[in-house]
Length: 249
Image 1 (cartoon, rainbow, N blue to C red):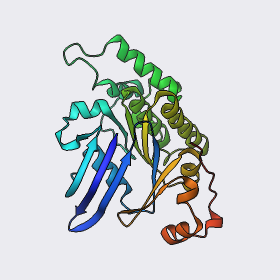
Image 2 (spheres, rainbow, N blue to C red; image 1 turned 60 degrees about the horizontal axis):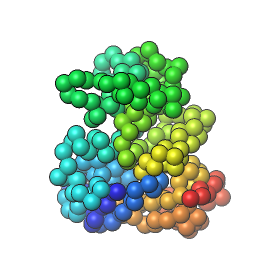
Image 3 (spheres, rainbow, N blue to C red; image 1 turned 90 degrees about the vertical axis):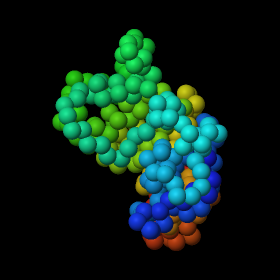
């Protein structure tokens, strides 16, 4: 479903990603982990076409990303960014409805099936109590959940998230992880997420990709990736200070 072959990205003459080889099969649930500045978010931007690699190639569904038009890509990939600035007044349900734009008829607009998908996404994410509110008035955590609902309404084959739990309290962090598991296991959605919380990554993702210094240094199950030696070497902390539940496939 997603393939990166020898991908390299450079910002202002500084290598951010180097020689990235990564293949994610349809239906997998994968978390990218690593310290700040490791290149995780840049990798997501390369996958979504927001960054053009200076070398290598990115493929989606076997097709080179550079040959896929934006409308077609939006039907394949749904993206939840880490932060979004909303510069104008928009109600929560109107924001979630933006997820249906790739599917709408450009002349007829929203169809009954689109309105049903929006309502279903709102209910699935559990933000019905926010309907009618201006997105600009929401807390950062509430806004993050609205963005997740937008992505769910998009009904894409692949869901990509950059730190989806960053503004959420503990209860909503766990609920969001459980939603991702449900989307993956019940709907078959391929999930690729950047996570800083190693506990959440180990508990809810059966495959972890550890990035450090712009390179993949480990790729496998939580038990194989989150070894004491790697935690010390990559994160510079005592492993006993980190609670690491382990996901099951």
